Structure formats: C-alpha cells, structure tokens
Image (cartoon, rainbow, N blue to C red):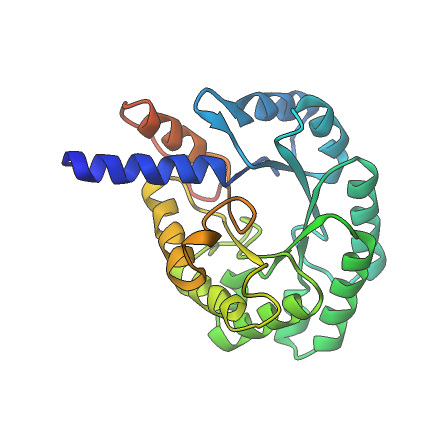
Length: 262
C-alpha cells in the first residue's frame, strides 16, 4: 500500500469512527458487556456517534456515557413483526430510558405479502411514540432482496417520518450490500422532503475500514459530501472499531470477527 492509499484509508477511518453506532445486540448480553461497550465507545482516537443496545440496557448505557455520545436502542427487533403494541412498548421503554435514538424494524414480511397498510400503521405508531427522538427504520434488505421492494420499503419509511433508513438487523444471512444501499440512497435523494434531511445507516457485516469506505463513497456520491457526517450517515457495527483503531494507530488489524456477527 502506498502513502496515498494509507492517507485515504486513515481519512475513511476517521469518518467511520465519528459515524459509528457501536453495537451489541447479543441475546446473552449483560450489564457488564454493555459497560465494556460504553468504555470502548470513548476511543483514544475520538468518540463514536452512538452506542446501540437492547431497550433493557438503554438507561444503563445513558448513565455510562458522556452526553456527546448518543444512546440508540432497538424496537420490534429482530423479527419485524406487525404487532404494533409490542413495537410501541419497546419504543416507550427506550424513550423513558433517556435514549436519543430508536432503531425499529419495518414489518418486512408483511411488505413481501403486499400488506402495506400494516407496515404504515406500525411505523406511524412508532414515529408518534418516539416524537423528538431520531428514528431509524431497518428495512432488512437482505430478506427483501428485490430492488423494487427495497425502494417501496424506503418510500413507506420516509412517508412515516423516518430520520434514517437502515439496511439490516445484522441477524439474517445477508446484511448490508452496496446494491441495496444504492436503492435506499436514491430513494432519499429523489424525495423532496427527505433529500436534505434524512440519513442512511449501513449495518451488518461491515468489519473493515475498506468495507466502510464503500458505503461512505456511495453516500457522498448520491447525497453529496455534506451528508457524510453523523447527522446523515451511520455505520452499525461491533468489530469494525478494531480495524478503525488499527488503521488510525498505524498497526496491522487483528483477525476479523467470525461471520454472522454484527
């Protein structure tokens, strides 16, 4: 790697760090695990944008972090059921915990069946319950697969007042892909009410700065350079921070996390 490539990689690493939603959504997570996550979020190279956890850990994470790092928690996760009451309960717990951001799973199986009304109903209810918080809608693009379905999920999310469109839960065999990202970014760019406001979050399977740089470039190309900052661009990951710190510290990266992890 020449010095120019190294400089570019370090620039991407700095942006990725500032835009990182450092995530732990393991079934066996404990308060001790989340405590370690919150410590890691305060990197020697700078803070991440947010820490993303289960609702039950949102209040603990908020107490454990400085004010400049947001707390995000997941709702209707990971299955994306059409149970509005459940999604609203999750959201209310997140709000009451003092978190700043809600990552809700769109009922993607209902969308595949053509039941757009159920999708819109759940998203509207969660938007109302999370008033004043950043709302990220997870489309689960690796299951929707089809560009037309992904675009429709994006449109329904934007119509419901989403602040971010997010690719994936990280819990399915296929998570973020550049093709799905393009479809989502185009949906934002071509919506007059969203183009200058709504952000994009790539999540699941992003483990290296080189992976992150692909999504940074797509966001820059489709939403403009001004969108490549935490208010409009996020990366949801856990092991990515290892590679970011390795790149910024000028040392070789550790082995990547096993497939199937966030």
